[in-house]
Length: 355
Image 1 (cartoon, rainbow, N blue to C red):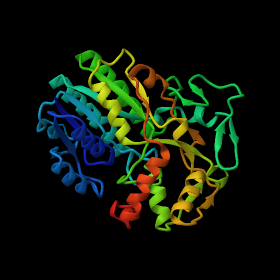
Image 2 (cartoon, helix red, strand yellow; image 1 turned 60 degrees about the vertical axis):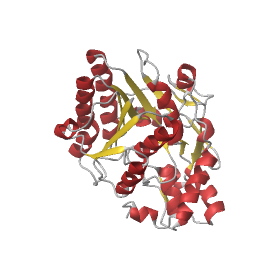
Image 3 (cartoon, helix red, strand yellow; image 1 turned 90 degrees about the vertical axis):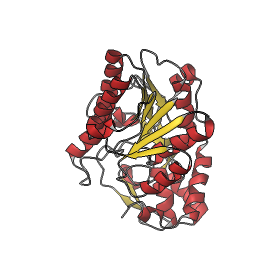
Image 4 (cartoon, one colour; image 1 turned 135 degrees about the vertical axis):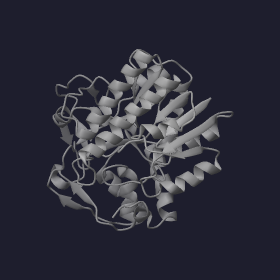
């Protein structure tokens, strides 16, 4: 088996490559990365020590893919992962589209040429901002909770959002590039007869993540709290009650190993997330950090931010039923792993390019 991982020097790509190198024998692991993010060069060195061959290349450049070896499967972990991309002043709309859609199209041409299977890592931010914002919420002392006594739309329950939830626009420019990538991947696979799996991922979290406030929020929050950086509860009354679930890349690796051994169904879209058991609000996360690192209070900000929603939890029941997969790493376990990394790596955020 020859496996190619794009974005291999990022947090998710590198953790997947290392997980596969530890779990399977006889595979040849290749990766490609543009090494754009600070910290990625360090992951490149670690990957090389584990036998992963890393190519420096940009998926936006079709010629860069021509240098890559022919592989049996591709895992696409390369993307600009921020929901604010294209509107935050840090990246342009064209850059976002080129990274997240044009790069995928070039990769699909690679898969078509080599008849390589594709596992596309997508996102739960393909779901409708409007429909998510309208979900009935109960505000408890330190978190939002879905009011399942009210009338609910298709694809949501107290267990979370399912794959049947609305993808009606607007979903953010970022979400649109990922939804378009899903559609094109499935169409390419059907037309050119290569297998495609699509994993809509929730919040991935673990030690060594290049976290920011817009992405990798769990890792970012722990590092910023320990460093006594300014933290803010943005919108929703400034109380930090908005809720997300998290899961570990090692659990994602286990799901992908299952998918690599089987044929995708006619609907290849599956959820991968922590679920209700691994869900936590920012206020609860702050309480956890206070106990570990000492008290540090975030500032409230009543000004809403684009695309923010009060509650987003992944229901992975379909994935569990079809693929016998569920996350094994608990959220406290993940937070403890990150906290140990925080204590061993002071100044991590600065080294990762966070101002």
